[in-house]
Length: 166
Image (cartoon, rainbow, N blue to C red):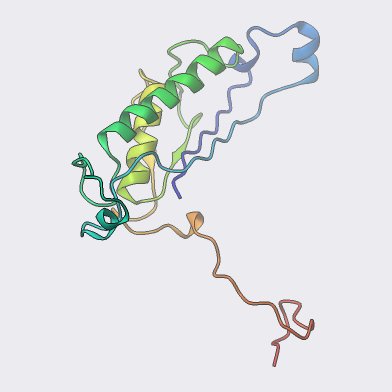
C-alpha cells in the first residue's frame, strides 16, 4: 500500500477565511491523507496477464510493478485537486511553502509508492519541492504499510489471542 501522508500543523494559516466564532471554537492541528499508489504496470513481466483476454495489451511506460507515466500524471492531478480544495476552504494560501517540519510525506519504499507521493506533492505543493520520507532502500517493504498475517480462529471458541488452540 502506498500512502501518501500529509500532516500540516498550520493553525494560523488554516483559519484565514473562517468567522471569528469558528476560529474561537476550532483549531486545525493536522491533516492526514492515506492513499494507495496510482496506476502501475503489471507485477508480472511475463505473459501471464496477457492470457486473460484475447485483445492485445498496450505497451507499458514503466518496468513491471512500477508507477506508470499515466499514474504519475493522475497523481499530480490528485495533488492539484487537494490543493484547490484546501485553498478554497481557506485552510492554506495558494502556492503555500511549508516551513520546517510543518508537512510530512511518508511513503512505502516501493518505487510505485514513493513516486506516487512525489507526484502528489508536486501537484499539492508545487513550489515546495517536498522531500518524501521513507524508511528503507528502494523496493523494500515497510511494515507500517502491511497487515499482520491472518491467523485462523480456533474452531473450539477458546482462542482469545493469548491461548493456543489445540
